Image (cartoon, rainbow, N blue to C red; front, side, top):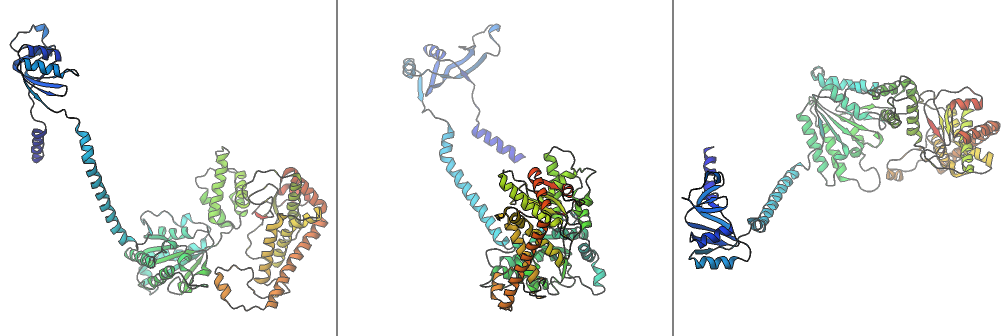
Length: 624
C-alpha cells in the first residue's frame, strides 16, 4: 500500500504539476488592460493568448479591476477571483492587430506553435506497436497449444461418467430380462470382487452385446455402470480409427491405462464392428490403421491381470463380420443377445416411455404392445413421442388412442402424401389393394386385416395392413406360401379386372422373389431342390470373399433352384387368381368402397366380406 501511494504521488507530481491561479478574461478586457499599461507579457499560441499582469488584478463579473479596489457587497459573491495571470481567446484574423497593439505598449511577446490532440499521434505510432505485440502473443499461444496437441493426439476420446451420480439403472431398462439377468452377475462382481477371487473364479474379460439396432445395448451397458457404481468409460469404435497409422493403437493404450487406473471400472465400446472387422476379408489389401488398432485391442484385453477389475462391454449388430480372435475365450468370451422385446416387454417399455406424458385413461398399452410386434425399444420410444407430437399439433392436453393409432400408421406406412390421382389410376390402385386384401382375408392361416387404404403414403400409392395376433418366431411353409399369394394378389387383381398390368406391383414382385429365394436356398422348402442349403438370398458383407470362394454348388443344382423359385411364385399367383375369381363380387365391393372412402378399417371389411372383424393389431403392410 505504501509503495502504491508513493508511486501515485510521483505520477501526480510528474504529470499534474501545481498550477497558478489564472483569470479567464475577454478579448475586450485584454485590449483595455494593454492600453492601460497593466500587461507585462503575453504568449500567443494560435488564437489562445495567455499572459501576466503588472500587478495583481481581480475579475468581478467579467470586469478586470485592480486587486486593491473596493467592490460593493452587492457585486461580490462567487463572481470575484484574483490573480496575476490571465487567459483569453482572440477572434480569427485579429492576430496582426493585437500584435501591433502589444508592440505599441511595450508588452513582451512570446509565441508557440499551436499543438493538436495527442490521440492522432498515438494512433499513428502506437497502433502498429499494439498490433505487433498482439500477433506475437497469439503466435506464442498457438505454439503452446500446438505443443499440447502433439502430446494429446494419441489420447483416447472416451467420455467418463460420474460413478456417484448414475444416470441409468436396471429400472430404466425393460423388455430384456434375460440380458439383465446375465449382466447382474457383472454388477455383483464389481461390487464384491473378493467373493469371486477367494474361490478362484474370474469374470469374463469382455462381454459382447449382440442385437438389432435400437434394442437397448448401449442402455444396458450404462445400466451396469449405474448399478455397480463404478467409473464408466464410453467410446465409439470409430473414434479409434484415424488417417495416420498408429494413432488408433495409441488411443486404445491410453483408454485402457485410464481404465486400469480407475479400477474397478467398465469400458464400453459401441459399434465394435467399426474396428473389429475380420482382417483381410476380401480382395485387395487391408486397412493398416484399422488392423493395428484391432491388434492393440486384442493385446490390451490379453494383458489384464486376473485381479484387475476392468470389464470391457462392447455392442454390435453385425457379429458375423467380427474377427474370430475377438470372440475366443479370454477376450469377448461371453455373448449376450439383446433381441426384440416380446409383448410383455413392449408393454413394460411403453410404461417407461409414457412416464410424465398425460395419456388418456382410454389408452390401452396392452393393446398397443400387442399391435407392435417387431418394434424395438427405440421404435416404441419414437411411437410415444410421435403420438405426443400429434396430440400437441391438434391442441390437445392429453394423448388419445387415436393419436397412437395415427403414430403407428406414420411410422410403419409413412406420412400421407397430398396429390390427386386421375379417376382411372385411383380405380386401378383400389383394385390392386383390394386384391391383396381379398387373398389375405380368405387364405387359411393368413394374418387378419387391420386396414386397407389407397391414400398415398411414403413411396406407396396404397397399403394393405395385416395384423398378426401374436408374435411369430418360427414360420411354416404353409404360412409363407400364403404370404406369397397375398403379395401376388394385387397384380393378379389388375389382370383379372383390367386385363392389363402396371408398374404398381414392383415392390410386391421384389419381396415375393426374395421370399421365394430364401425358401429354396436357405430353408429347403421346395421339393425340386429338397433340404439343401444353397446360401441364395443371404446378404454378403464382403463382396471380395464371395468372389474369392470356390463355388461348391453345381450349375445343374443352381438351375434347379431357379426353377423352384419360379415355381413358387407361379404357384402363388395361381392361388391368388383362384381366390379372386371365386370372390369376384367381394373384390368389386371392396374396391368400390375404397374409391368412395379411400380407407376401410377392419370393422367395415367384415361388413363387406361377411366375416366377423378381427381386432386390430400389429401392422404388417403389403402393396404399394
